[in-house]
Length: 83
Image 1 (tube, rainbow, N blue to C red):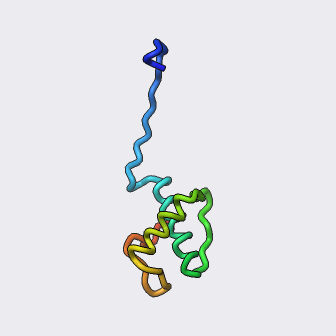
Image 2 (spheres, rainbow, N blue to C red):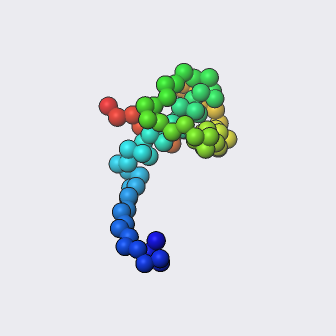
Image 3 (cartoon, rainbow, N blue to C red):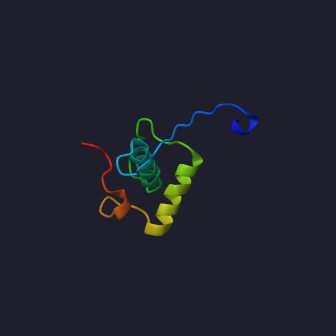
C-alpha cells in the first residue's frame, strides 16, 4: 500500500515466548493431542489451537520423545497450566 502512495500505519506484536498467553495455549493444545494419541484423558484448553498443524506437532513430539505415560512425560511438557 505504501508503494502505491498510501499512508500506512504499522503495529507490531512481540511474542516473547515466556509470558505469552498464545504460546501457553499452543503448548497446552499440543499436549492435549499428544496425550490423546496415547489414550490419556485430556481436556482441550479453552481457546486452544485446533488446526491440523497442532496435531502434526504433537505427532512429531511423540516421534522424538516416545509415547507419554502417566509416569513419564518429556521435559517439554512440564505443567503449563497456571495455578
